[in-house]
Image 1 (cartoon, protein in one colour):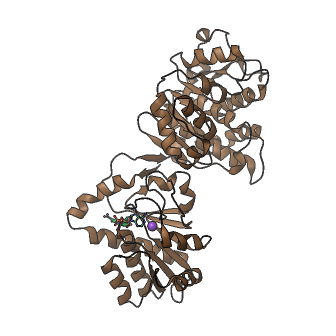
Image 2: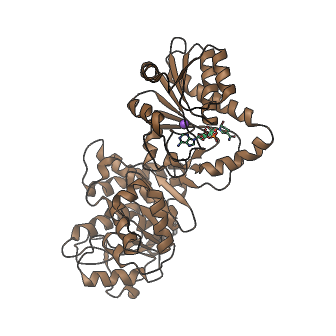
Image 3: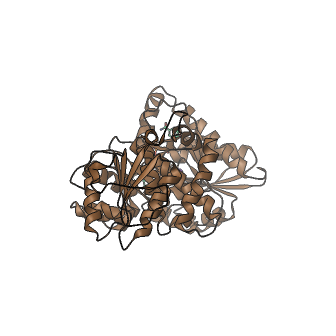
Length: 474
Ligand SMILES: NC(=O)C1=CN([C@@H]2O[C@H](COP(=O)(O)OP(=O)(O)OC[C@H]3O[C@@H](n4cnc5c(N)ncnc54)[C@H](O)[C@@H]3O)[C@@H](O)[C@H]2O)[C@@H](O)CC1
Ligand SMILES: [K+]
């Protein structure tokens, strides 16, 4: 599991070490870690060129000391001082080993040319002490360096919000971010996470609290994915009730049920008009008469009063429930954490707007963590926001982000399959936020496998899920 923290949490954890006079030691560890990462990227140190973009704070200090290490190894290092102030001991250290210095205000053209001709550009402008994004000349230079193939970010790409992944102004895309003490949550959150590239963590031995964000890995999935025991039977594995499909949209129901079956559930009881595969059992028309452990409602439910009534009854049944697509509009005032909403950005904006918070899709895309959190606050539900990176926020404060998906998964019906997989996990008794993150991860991996780098139809995704799971669980 990747554990990530807000910039504030990391700074709080560093405080006791700083108070103990260990600031210089921490900076040296950070600088060595950064310099080593850069050296790994160079064919050979001697004769290579590095340019360091230096901001006014300790982030610039880390980068300058890394420059000193690189210069000692034979790299030709130049520093571009981006602000009116800089870390003076760091600059002196770099100059003592022959580092060149440009000042952005005076040497803009030379600085830009040096950066473009460098093998590596170290982005040390802003770190966890940033307030807002890059502005003025610094923003201009960064915009002019867009597309440089050798950017290594110091702690985080400058201009990326360390807690939320939001960007405000230009951000230089890095091939690698060398981050100190702990992974910052913003490095794993859309929209900015793409700028981080590969993430390397330099351990500073900090005493950290509960993570602000988690990302499941294969080991977690193998540990938490439910496996039937020798004495299990179809009822003990979990029975899922599904209210999905309408005369107009029968396919959504089939995809959702396909997702549930592929993820592994004891039985599916289906209510709706869509034809179903032979293993699916017809549910009783009255919601309360169905013996199930969880519900899935909403895929393909549109303009169908009977399906809408059933969806509402399932949502208010007190059982864990996934509320997707057409059922999102039926949500009562307040629900519990066992209710999982699965909107995409447009649906989340509509949901928030219905609750008096006028929101556009573009707002959600710009600040996905904030608006997902707002939906949790306003409804009481666990919310899974679909996207290239899936964000899950639970009322308990747990946040997950999963980024296994391929852009080929952005296809009609993909979300129905995800909803079915998630609901199967709820029926098997997996806790809701964990289930949401697990379903997103395996759905993404199945999409990658089914796609093989090319287009996929949604029905291919469920077909690939058993292959992903057998690899994971064997
Ligand atoms: N605190 C610590 O113990 C450690 C900190 N480390 C480094 O220190 C960094 C944090 O250092 P700082 O707290 O000095 O903060 P930063 O270096 O992130 O930047 C703060 C400086 O930038 C200015 N600034 C803020 N927002 C700006 C904006 N939008 N445009 C232009 N200038 C802006 C501030 O006035 C301040 O001078 C971390 O990211 C990390 O790189 C590491 O050395 C490890 C240890
Ligand atoms: K930086």
